[in-house]
Image 1 (cartoon, rainbow, N blue to C red):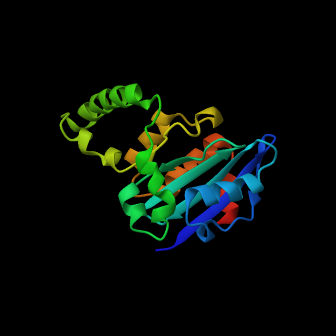
Image 2: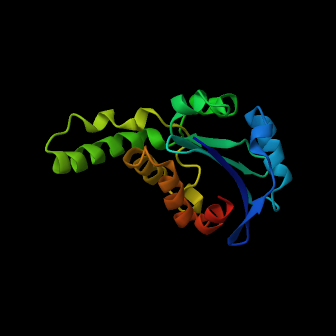
Image 3: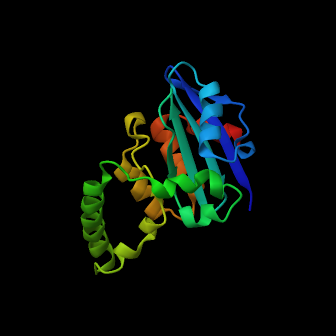
Length: 179
């Protein structure tokens, strides 16, 4: 299985690719410094890491702010060469999503009860696998609830989830061109 990495930064309403070798950085702080170095002003910079058919991660840096991180399956990612880089996602308390998580569980139970005829299994979806800040793209058009839903529904296809996120944020074509 192959890895895909890309670094993109916002430039006005468009996104531009940046030349940063994600795998050359062993810590989140080191990568964040490299991302800040390719930013256009204080515009957001995103590093995307995907392990085909297993997991993806998005690292976001805005100016001098602390890096923000989301990993779709932290356990799988921790067994990869990016494990140390992505490990800080486990320590993140997803600000503001505690209430959303409770709401989401209720929404999922309702949706899954209608679809599956029972409400006991939806709680066991891969929701426990993701880690980090689900709302890191909220201001760009992808709510934490939407990101969690996409990851839970398409856990076996991280490329699809990134494509959907890219469509909403506006970098899908660029990401596809970089593949």
